[in-house]
Image (cartoon, rainbow, N blue to C red; front, side, top):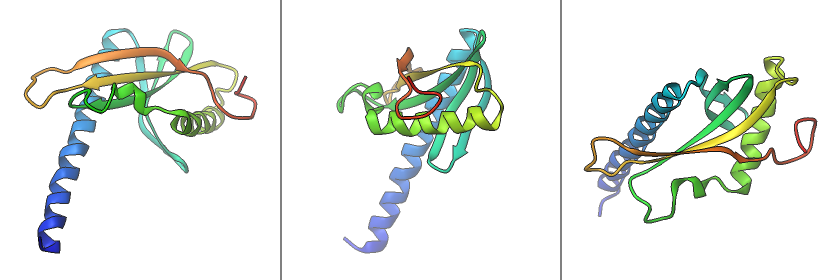
Length: 142
């Protein structure tokens, strides 16, 4: 196989993957809004990566990681939020809370697992509230 055709295939696969993730994030956002969450930020970037969604639920700041898959063949989407990812999300969240003067507010981490088969019109959404505790050292951590 020629390198140019391999690169073209990789580009198509990446676009498909990226658009699935974007569709999943939009579906998760609609789902959370219907539950009464107020979305305050999307794709908040930091030095260590990105926070998918940031919302307010009552008086709690909620950092939401969205994982979208077409099937459970590689496991449930939420299983992709392992210890390293949790630590990175914790550090990103702490930076966000510091930048916005929100350290005195309660905060939690939710995971929204979106399963959207290629032939389905609508996804299946699992919302895991308080999916994990803050991981690491510092004033936010237990």
